[in-house]
Image (cartoon, rainbow, N blue to C red; front, side, top):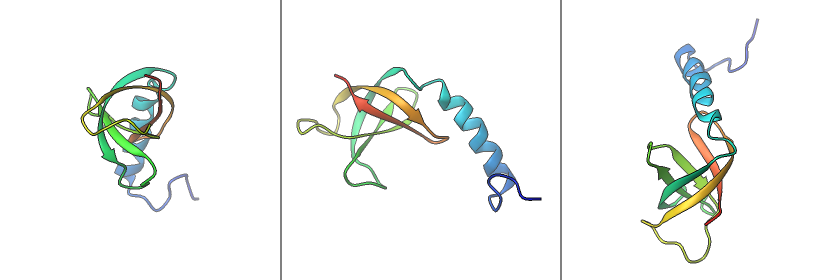
Length: 88
């Protein structure tokens, strides 16, 4: 019998489930993020961190720089990452 996430170590599947539960409460909220620079996985997006050290990925506006504080609206999340849009 094959379960979702088959092939991943049991601890990783368990951790991912816990992480999504933890990150799901961010969906629909606005959060302040410290812009860090280009995302490691997608060069057209930037990454930053919340004050709780959560990684947030967003599409940058032309006038932002690393170190800027931004307000993001979070429409989706996965176990490790928040995804947002700049609102301020």
